[in-house]
Length: 422
Image (cartoon, rainbow, N blue to C red):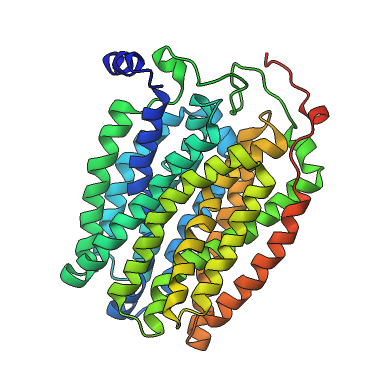
């Protein structure tokens, strides 16, 4: 480890970027597989085992509900237990649980496995990496978060393209096993050999200067307490925005493959559109992180939500093939907001004093919406035989969110009240 640090220092490369690379790898085989590839299984599993799409979508609802619950208590969890220790345990559990999907024949089996998968994934994706990247980066934090989180898009792009063909060739049982082995092969070396939660663990300091955005840090903190934040309108506006963005972005990303397939396009073509979106999503996470550093929270979030609206319109009018360009571009930039935006919005609006707790609440609101969306979407499908009504509902909701964003303002200087920690 020290040799690697010395090698990078000689070339004036900050070691924190290695942590970002670790995040890319881990996110690609966790969120990139568990969440971004789930839609590939909807048709083959339900047609093979005779489930309704709504009942099978509860699997994804379970993983999101568990993420939500863990996010609500993430501040206390990460104060009591070491982040890296939790990640290592989860890194062993997740591939084993994902492998068990291949043996499921009843809905309750899928639900039981999804419970374990949801808990393990929660400790391997956005919650821990938000804190780790915040510990390593005080300068260029938006860019670092964007680059780190692009791993979910890269994984989604790669594994949607591969898994779509594998399901057709080998069946869905085999694909669960293949992806589980890949998860273990990528994650375990990263978690046990490279990843470090804080720079002082290896004798380094964060990049730049300023407070570290995690509760209990040694550097000065600033901003509102949870109680002060909860008494502000922007706190509840941000929760409502997170619910709405979570609902609409999940609707957009999860409906691409089944909707395009339902309206007459080949399954391989639909998965190809999904792969293009995932690939561009990786780029757009970097882009959006940079935009937050340059344009600020309001303008950047407005652009991202507008992109969700464009993607939904493209999908609603998906019978016209040129609209698929709007699906890919809109979903890529818009869905990037569901991961990149919340850490930056939380710090910009409330500071760092209660960052982990407030971010956990905002993230939980997003996860609540993500858990409700698959059930709502597939209930609409089961009732009408089409996703059109669900998509139209999301379009209206997205327009409402654009207006809500104007009520969420950054932290004022007089609210910062910067004081050193004891």
